[in-house]
Amino acid sequence: MGLCGLRKAQTLARTLPTSFTKKYSSTTSQQQEQSPDDEFTLSLLDGDKEGIAVMSMRRFRYKNAMGRNLIKRFLDSMEEVKFNSKIRVVVLRSADLKERLTMSPQEVGAFLSKLRRSVSEFHNLPIPTIAALDGSALGGGLELALACDLRTAASNAKIGLVETGLAIIPGGGGTQRLPRIIGPSKAKELIFTSRVMDGWQALEMGVVNHCVEQNDGGDAAYQRAMKLAEEILPNGPVALRMAKAAINRGVEVELESGMKFEEAYYAQVIPTKDRMEGLLAFKEKRKPKYQGH
Image (cartoon, rainbow, N blue to C red; front, top):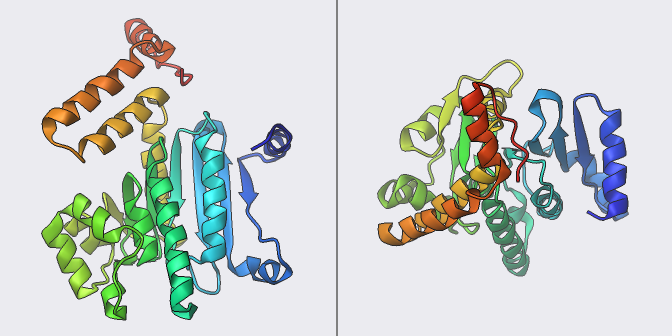
């Protein structure tokens, strides 16, 4: 975001009592007509939730269906989050992918390329990410959730990599990320069977971290994700980034190399003012006030 855009965002933020919400709208007249049904919002919360960013993907005609326009806006929002040092946790409200059904083979290839890029970029965000699965997270929607660090699900959520039932395979990283999360054997079972799970079944298989009974508002998974985000929020921002990097890099290599990654990232927190603040707060028996440097 440029300086002018940043000033506008800051001005807008001051006019909203609970959050700054940015809607990524389409540009062409045809896309503008679709925007009520294909909406992406980025909300930067304030007050006691300052530091939490919420990305919401909603298509009201096809609930949580993830399309081409949505992916573009998603990529734009990640650029904004990536370079905002005040954001410490991202909560993603889930999306399902349906648009491939209407595409030609050539369009599918281009679309999947953008999908892989968006999922990979989200996985590589340096801050903790939490997916909240309150509706359907099927196919690409689940692949995006698998790119998050943590996942919460409502009891009535519909979760699965269903591509083999359509005579294709997961194309947004599902064949790679799911086995790394739950193990190859369980991942093969879910992909080979094209199984759709509810939240409790996903918890039993290890696909999600937490499952909660759905509430009347239909946002139980989101509320659970927010509680997790609030638990993460008080901790050192630099430490969170280094811990995520150490884990992500370490799990891809053998233990000895992983320990070297841990040593390298640990060295990054030693010279920070936050580390000294943590020690001082412990000594003075008070809560630390971390600034992210």
